[in-house]
Image 1 (tube, rainbow, N blue to C red):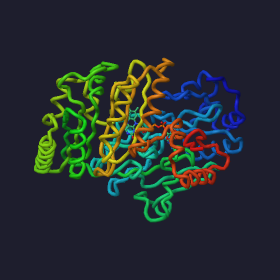
Image 2 (cartoon, rainbow, N blue to C red):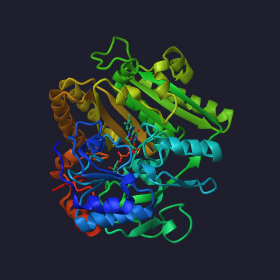
Image 3 (tube, rainbow, N blue to C red):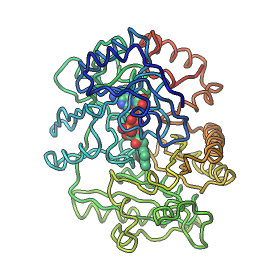
Image 4 (cartoon, rainbow, N blue to C red):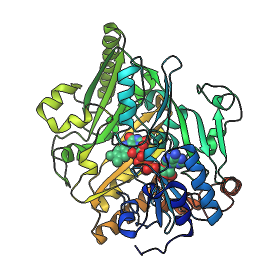
Length: 481
Ligand SMILES: Cc1cc2nc3c(=O)[nH]c(=O)nc-3n(C[C@H](O)[C@H](O)[C@H](O)COP(=O)(O)OP(=O)(O)OC[C@H]3O[C@@H](n4cnc5c(N)ncnc54)[C@H](O)[C@@H]3O)c2cc1C
């Protein structure tokens, strides 16, 4: 990381926002330079803390005038290097834009500023909107709701209702030239209920990784909260049996969430940093399944459907243990408590001794999950990493998550190189099996360049040129050239 010269935008930013909301100086800026991944750090020239839409407009006007790169961040926990700044650029830290603008229980929608965290939204719903819930990622509670939706995230209700990008009811954004736009019903009415029926401009911001504008408000759809809720764990002794169970349960449409973590996760929860080999008799994958209902009878019926699915998978020769109630696991192993309720801080991942966390996170067809997972796990082991994957069916089983997770020693150059080599290979294998990286890390975009449809690549470039002619917005992200 090299020391940066003072950027011409810096003085204007200090004049506009005041010195208290502008950070300068290499030492103070170091905390903005990196994230937990293997992506190389880059030092910005300045970091700013807007608190209003007007501030964001002024910042972008200054950046545009001075042709200075802008990178947006809230907690930089996307695990893809997306919030690592352009060297010598401006970091726009949105964490102080943290107002929950509205919660409409009747229409089941919350409008949030980009700094609102999962923890803040949960406490607001728990306190004053008890008939509705939102989906939570496995991400730390302090991470941004809007960022997760804009990056098409996955959470506790995405098996039922699709990815979080699908839940965006509308967006307010500031464009590169400082103009403000709105998408969805809120562009015309006072209501943020959905994206129909104007042209769907939310797509101009979804998965664009901050390259088309800065989102200043986002409507996220909420869902009915059921009176009864329970989580059970299902240990499955081989991955193929687990995938067969995923397929069956997703298609019933009866369950909220089903997530599987392979055996290294359990060991890491128990404090073993780099588990090497699976014990004889140890299940290969542990699933959690969320059951919710309004009536006791409904819970019984859903448990019966689960039992029947397990019977069917067992009848094909797979080894599945009986479901275990949440308490039975957490009473014996309190270390498993983070899996009891989301959002939760999965300390075994983010507070690991080496400090590094990375993954190749993908969405892909359920039909290719057995081969994609098997092939990817072989690659992880070949590179000397524990075979840790997280998987979950999405949208009733139309597709699924396949995420290869690695913790590593961030300050060990040789290990970082090994991580890079492993991830590059994983991306190609995932693509070979029809899986597409979500939160596409900047290093991975060129890996896709050879495969992306030429018309699509040209269209992405044209849209970007139209939205940001001076190429100031997150210039390092989504580069297919
Ligand atoms: C242990 C762990 C588990 C996780 N599990 C999950 C999971 O289950 N599901 C999941 O989806 N994610 C998961 N994540 C990833 C991550 O936490 C989410 O993507 C998160 O919500 C990102 O929030 P953030 O505050 O860290 O965003 P940042 O990383 O600070 O921002 C991410 C990027 O999004 C774009 N962006 C953000 N806000 C705006 C805006 N207002 N306007 C324009 N662009 C914007 C920018 O490109 C920005 O650089 C996990 C992360 C960790 C560490």
